[in-house]
Image (cartoon, rainbow, N blue to C red; front, side, top):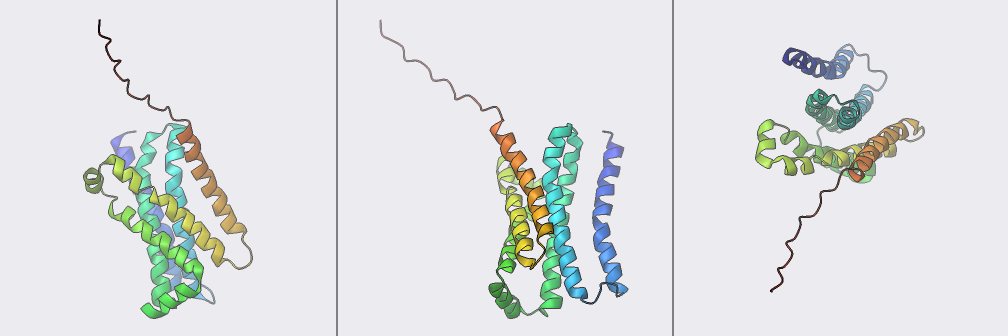
Length: 210
């Protein structure tokens, strides 16, 4: 892929990933978020966070299946947008639903277990966002960086569970997210099992005295 094409693709992902937030902000400005705008904004940003988390996890299997290695560039952008929407999800809840009350937010989280699961997912995304730069990758080293970024699996699982627990009646949508996540994680397990195992280092045979 040409450098100019890659730069355009990066810009395309960056701009399009911001479209949902832009539309949500515009609809909020125009008072078009329905009868309960705060609840609508919370649900929408939470859904977007989960979608972008799953898109982030989709990049690696899609790259390996298609052989299009240039797709890897989008993983960081999608992951950062997942963190952005998850943070926005919490901030709207904290500021508009809980009135910026730390104690009120804490007691609400204790009372509603799905909120504890959700905040766990957000917290494990913090080190992923902080270490997403090239400098941090170099500082940590590739092996440690990859091990740390497996927390993305934890964040996605927590997000799906949070959504499932929050829904009171129709659970079809959270179950659909769970099915997609199961496929993405299942692919990684199968890929791991089928990787060629490195042979153990050969040991020198002791010499027999003549």
